[in-house]
Image (cartoon, rainbow, N blue to C red):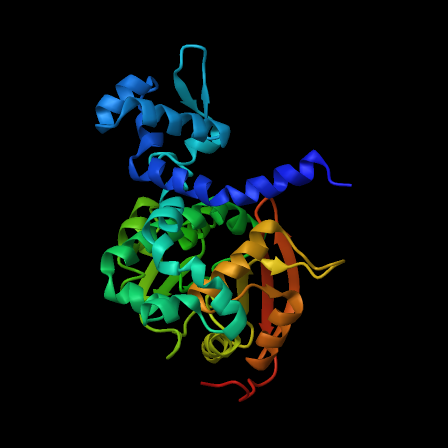
Length: 350
């Protein structure tokens, strides 16, 4: 028998696109920052934004229904805890990540082409734009900068958990492969004063790294190198990390990244992979985040989220053995620790 909860779930899904657009407009107009700065009266906010007061109030009421703000008896609006995370000045701000998803690349990803991706197996973003995701970013530096800011936001959310989740060897050097501006590595070095760091990413990826490392007061213990992990990965570290890298790529490309890590890592080294691990218990549906992220990887980048068995197969083909997998709470991401073992296979080499 159909329940009211069943109907509510369907209508929530039907209106989810509208919710995303409401969030996009709120971010584009910097409404969370404006409310956080004290403009809680719609009339005052409308004057500040040069907006129509009536329609702005309707948007604010929709944001309240979405749980991003609350309305008091005088018609003033205050941010909720969730809404506070959309302020650009919040220490754990997700504003840049939300803006990237809803404002900067929403039209480029081509979600209307999801059906084509399902039917053909091809990446919808590349089919729509003529370049793969990172090729397009390289041709549009401002968009690449938006991506870097978004990835910084994502890393800040879990950086402390990652820094505390692993028993880093005293005095070791840690290499963050594809580590962007160094947000994660900075947190690890700050939490472990005897560690040294090496940051490796493309020139565009590490463009803001010196500033990030400097803000964390760890620049003197970290070197920054620009390069391409499809060509090689620098030697010189004992611990190598890949956070949110492999899921951007298909299995062939992921094996190549791992092989280059294997060529650089010493025999007593360790590889740490931080990504969601899809649940295969029961129906194998997994969490909502991991399954929607899997669709995002499929449609936008041609990559995928993976199961533990998938990671074990990839690592084995690259000359690693997975030693353990552990979920980091409360975030939906896992630590996959792999050790060097065996010789990389030639299967799937590009």
